Every structure is written in C-alpha cells, then in structure tokens.
Image 1 (cartoon, one colour):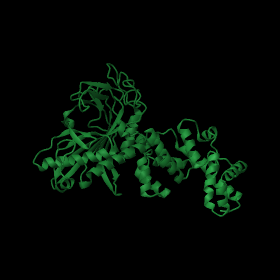
Image 2: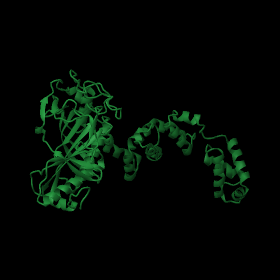
Image 3: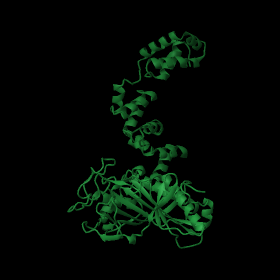
Length: 504
C-alpha cells in the first residue's frame, strides 16, 4: 500500500509480528511568561513581525542576556511534576549551528547539565491502564525566530526564492522534555505516543506554565522511531519526525514510520538516521541527515551565571504542584455522577476545568455542564476559538445559573443574557436589566395576556373546557409570544387552565 508518496508500507499486523518498536519523544514547551528568557521583550503570540524585539534577542553587539527567574521556576515546577530530580547546580551552553532564524548563530540551551533529570510520568491509556514513560531530562533554552519560505513547492527552504524572518519568537522561554527510550509498547506504540503527549499537555496546562497550543507552536513534539527484530537487544536506527502539531498526528506519524521502516527492513534495506517532515495527509518525507548531540559544537555560556536553586525554594515550588489532571477528572466525575461518555465529551470540549470553576462559584454541576458543554461550545465553534477563550468567566456563568434558579430568567432568556455578556455588554444582571429580559411575575399582566389569547382562539378554549388539557399548549405559546418569552411558562399554563375552569 502506498500513501502520499510512492513509498510502500508493510501492514501493521506484520510490523508487530516481526519488529519491536522503540520510541523517543522530545517535546518543546513555550512558557507563558510575560517576557522572554533573556530580555524584557513581550512574548505575546501573533504580534506584528519584528515588533517584540530588542538588542538582546536580535544579537546586536554589546547586548547581554539576563536570566528570567519566572522561567527558571516554571522549569523547576515542570521537573517536579514529572517526578524529576532538581539538580543543585546547572548552567547554560551555546549550541552552535547556523540557520537564518538564529541571529546569534548559536542557541542558548543546556547540554550536559540540565536542570531536571531522572523522572517519569504514568500515562493513562484508552483502556484505563497506565504506562510509565521514563523522563531522561527537562532542560531550559530559548526559542528561535520563525522563517517563512516563499516560492518553493513545499514551503520549506529548499527551492524557495525568498525567506521572511520574524524574530518575535526568538528568545521565548522553552523547556525541552526528553524521554528515555520507550520500550515494551508493542502494538500500542502509536497509542502510547499520543497518550503521553496528551498527558503532558494536560499536566502543563494544569501547572499553568504554558497555553500548550499545538496549533500555535506552544507545544511541539518530535517523534523518534526505530525498529528492531523481535528478540534483538540492540536498538535499530532511528528517524526523528519534527514538529508534529496535533495529538492525533503524533499517533499517525509513529504508525506511519513503523510501517515504512518495516517495509524497508523486510526488503533487505537499511534505515537512514535522518529528520523527517510530517504531512497532514498522514505520511512523512525525508528532511536532513540527523546529527547526534556530539555533532554540535557546545561551549559553556560565558554571559550567564550558573543556576543553583536552593533546596528551600525547590520545596516551596513542590507545594504548588496540583493534583494530576486525569486523577482530578476521575475524582470530579465521581462527584458529579456522570458517565464516561459525558466526561469524555467535556474533556474533548475543554470544558472540565470551566465547569468545575463554575460549580465553585455556586452553580449546580448539571447546570454548569449544560451551559459550557452545549450552548457555549456552540458559541466557541461559531467564533472559531477555544472554549476558554470566550469572553465569559465561570463566575459569570454561575451568575446566570443563579438568575435562572431564582426564577428571574428562563433558559431561553438566559441564552440572550449570555449572548450579551459575550458581546461585552456587562455583567449578567446588568445585561438582563438593560435588555429588559427579566421574567414577568405580575399575574395581572399575564392574566390579561391569557384572556386575550383565549379570546383570539375560541375553538381551542372550548377544547380545553371540554377536558382536552393538552390543547392549552397552543394558548401558552401565544402568551409567551405576546410577552416576548418573559412570562413563566408554567405559571401561564396554570392561569390558562384556571381561566377555562379546569385543573391539570
């Protein structure tokens, strides 16, 4: 079978019967600090090109880096959450290589002295079991600029007629998290890869150290894949698929590489150690010959002092580590009494934390789930944004729920109130007042509307008087229309039946 290119792939079952996959996952995380790693420039995504720059991140002569303390503390918290040892002393190095998006021609990173080492993450899989992924290291570095290549067929530098450079991203704090070789996954290797990146993303979001937007490059995964014949101890030659930018794509990339490599090995060929590019059509293509760390020229960074976090500060930061997100979700699910399917939908919508926060502000979990998991998901889809990016807070949603519970709003009117909040018209009670949306509680006004509706529909009135109580729905509808939905439908029905001399 061929995909994307004319590369032949081995059937997956045949791959697993012959080969043992070994994975290695490198995840780069952009920290959500206010300023860059070594200078005071802003880190806001989406700014006009080359507007968030200064002599430091542009590598102008005489400019010296100053370490961002908040970035260091975020790195320590990430290491602690990954069960790593936080070292007593570490330092930065210059990783020397040339690329147009590197203004210094080196990247300030950490080489053989990372800040966090020897950790692990117990990753939940689809069937409820866990798989322990060993963490070799988490180290600090700066991000590069962004190059946009124009004129070529692939959007890459090869064949391009020009390249545009934006250095807004240059110097943004990065944490690179590197796993140990992941063995023993068998047929579940693609699932484990996806589950690990998913768990890591959830963990980092829970730590509030990054927005982990894969679509914006805040979280980027490089997937290393190699195969070895069943029973062989020595690892096979690996490839590294770069910058896979979605959770599903991580799984697809690993599966594709396993099938591609297996086809080559089965045919008597050999695997080239190289980087590969992932294509959203579901295949990888060759990049460049893959260097080892030893192929880079590393030198100690002379302009930065070593980092030596005190044990007291490390323990203070350890106390800030929250409950693992998937354990918190299980606890919350039990508290809410919802099914696995409902919880899965809330997770997929990014609504769990928002619902939980709304409950903390006094709303019932059922009501909070209904607003965030249905109406507000629709609004996010219409706006083309993430659910948590909507201009409404859990406290405001809880206030709307309270207005409904107090009988001041119907659900229909509440939707209009939320639309007003989303439009920037103020707090829920203000929107309700300004739009005149409060439920009509004056029986005199409602009775008048009921009498008018009955008079306009004498046939229906006769049916109700004759005992066909279900016919009252038409009159209730007419009254609700006349009152612009601001009457209490249940109270309207009571008054309709009373006016017709029947009970229901």
